[in-house]
Image (tube, rainbow, N blue to C red; front, side, top):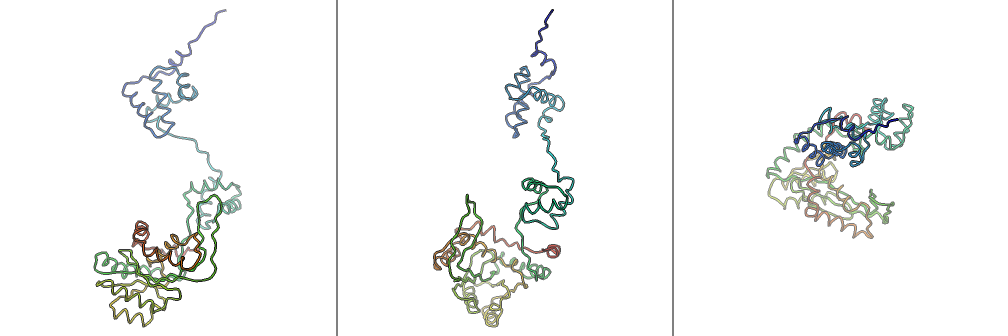
Length: 361
């Protein structure tokens, strides 16, 4: 009996013959060193080793792959060259919700859920498919959904009146202010009550904030300059009335020789004869907003920033500390929070479409 000894190494080279030019080898080396995807780098490395006439099983050992995968890479290169090596087509298992995609999209459009648990429960009732919360979260992200905060539309707002006011009254005056021909101020009062302002924090355990007793409040009547973002204030611990509004008017009149426009809401203490007569005497234009239009008052955004920076998740032992924190922020914000103010207080205003108003929950 005769035994034939086979040279498997030479057989491997004979089974897949690839000719490489110096340019092709250099291209493969560059692909191995620079391509961002590790799979493509492995593919290129196997071909570089192949160009050096190294046996397939040694290439597999060097790269850490099985010989079948190595041969597969060789076949890809023979079929389409470097371009074929760079193609990534991983198998993506299809979600069991995929056949019901249109039904699920309609569900999220008509009744957006507040939690993934609620979505799982509702969709199981709708299509009879049970799915875990994490799988549902991945699927809705695949569909393009995001966890968004619900916006507010004043129920009695007149969106046509808002748009007309913005285009015909507010914007022309802002254009004059940008040109240095007018001072435009957004006016409003904020009433900060000493208490616990709760917020979200990144923490290992739930954090508790002590709640002060009492109902003391710090009132701030502010006028925010549309261009410089500087604020002029009148403050007290009691009430904001027409007296404080008149005090603010006198401060503003003394601060500039340019024409002044105040953008303000329709609060009674701002629209009374005392205020309107003084404004006329001082040459200040009062540009009253349409009813229910906080979205057109720039200073509303500033009050939210004050709460975020000074009050959220903070405890003040007494009212003077509470008041001082707010006053200090307002006095120094143009130096300490310049970038945030520039980003937050842009002269772009939220307006609403008919559909947004019609389909608001």
